[in-house]
Image (cartoon, rainbow, N blue to C red; front, side, top):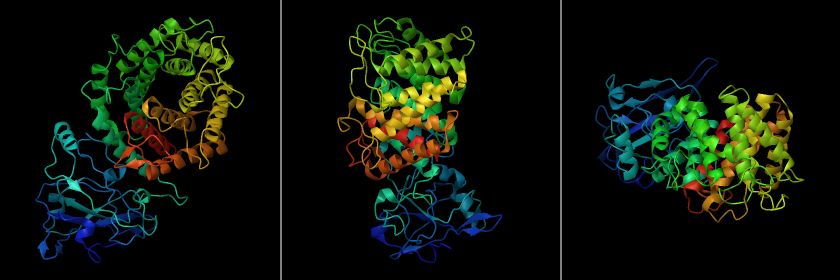
Length: 519
């Protein structure tokens, strides 16, 4: 039994000085063959002679995530999460949703008697919620503008103390499995915290920090997360998707998410396909199809075949051709008979056969950056995203064709990336990983597509799935421990933390979403 009432360990230095009004919630675990439940108690406490009053009736109460069992009651985790839960307007951790949203009116029912809360998993935990002003002005404005009811009293959480189970690092205070990895819920909660931080870059033009193709990757990440955690993010994305679709289609004199770089526009094609998958709204698939047509008109123009990187530029690189293959393969599975039978499937097969024979896949099953003028592998950097994009396309082709060769190639490429592009500790790295800029986006693309393979590819062995899962979880755990500051995520996943930007933030969020997706 954990009881903060019995062992409060109340200390002003530990909990902070702004104890204007507090609610003490204690959880008692009861475990039997058929029941796991928790009982919540509210009590009034006195700190240094100053009465701590319960908030007034009707005040919203938010709950921090459940904690690990056997932790002394005074060691309350300060890494609480926040978000307006009632109207789904901000993403909220799953743990908040597993405990019903209460108001102080609920807690007052029965003249202060205990309120029982049924919890769907082990909840040997306690929560202290202190009603003080702490949220950043931008988040307050977001809550006020997007919520039917604006929160009158923002909430803060206590400063964490050392945890004897998981060490003293604030990044190690997480829900862990018996194998020492974080749980699916923990990864999802961390993704939520990162998405809230990412929103600070979101502009009225529907882009994040005015980044063009990078914003397409943000949209893809959000839709990936929504695919398996709709309750945590769908209220937020319900506003984001249509706003970006309406406000961001024009760039550099072009419209309809077209620009002078074929790779840029094909990122948007993939983004809107993923949004269609989670919303089933035809307008997003129609936009993806329209974008694809612009690239389709240019495919085969280079003397080496394939697709140019940029309109008016003679370079042929891996990325735009992988994106073309993947977009065609995805459209083929969503529009198999439109505009005609095999329309997109034939494009996907054509793109695959050209790419496979282009020489860009080297002897180690890594993909170099492009071709020379005489159509040879240029031997340039094997960027992580070049190993990632093709995995999604090959997985889609394995469905539409029923041919296992696509899965075999995808496994070879993914395995090569995991073994060749990681440091001695198994953490994914890229050349000049500290340089920032576009390169900060790359690693997340690989992890996103490894997760997609893990969950969707036909014929993966148990050993391969175990390798993929371990890789994603190890990297996600390391990012949160060594590459995170205030829910901002830097470009170097092995640490130390370097100031985040939109690219590094969304890339690391791809990783956290991927880890949640395989856990």
